[in-house]
Image 1 (tube, rainbow, N blue to C red):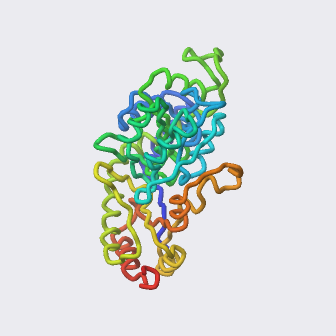
Image 2: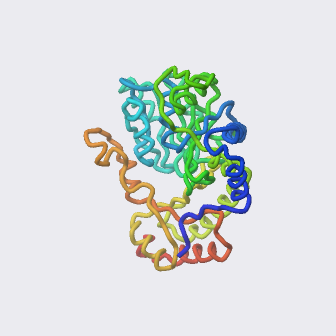
Image 3: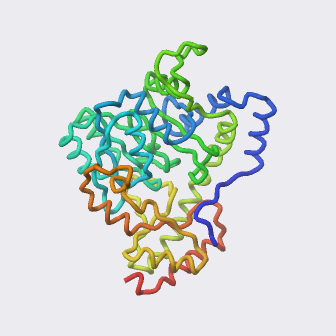
Length: 364
């Protein structure tokens, strides 16, 4: 079976982790500071705060921006549940606006209406599957309505919008380094921001509320959500390899899309003008998704559904009223195929052949 994901590790990662083990400073330390600086530089931000995982990165961003009790945050219903959970963990309430039917990202017009109707305080944009959201429109929205703008870039390492890296548009951004992401630290996350004060508050929040002076000067409520030096060492190596991996993902995606040109009933992902897709997932759309998945499985191709249930339809969100018909429909039809950089030419040919052999009864 051709796997849907395949984390890439080599001798360099092993050597980096061994160096930290031999040094003995395995918790938070200089290795983490270097990774923060390198990743912020890569993503075009002034400050980076490394944390334990992507959910923590979102939560810490909200805490650092002062978004909490009584606040409302407009966001997408089609994402991993962590996007909305982080809003609630900070004490705020998510407001779900519908998505664009082509990109699957939060629709700027729907988001603007939701901000006005609910008097929201912030917008959380998710760059779903690695495709940048329409950041010009969202920046205009944030300026016009005087709301905070946060980017969930957990799936978008290496993506860019009009030549500018994602993670550098909002008041803050959050990345995840989970094993299946475009790069990994095993587990981990990063908060990016151009605002030094926001970065300081995020760093304090994930380090027991300590002040920048360190020691036992705890100035605010916080917790232990720090990244380890072991994770950071791995991240520094992965970051060096990330540009090549993203190029490979784009090349792989192009080969799959070429095959899909012959299957009109299966819609490939799109990248609108100005959007440089990072292809964390290669997500197609088919009215008979289950049949398509079964066909590909018979051909030895693994697939996945991200995400089968919109967030406001989950049990944890009982009581949340959300009129999001476009997201509801997309959740029934999206299917992700392998696109990771570990794919061989032979495997890509097998996936393409399986796509071209999709029965007309499925593609109709």
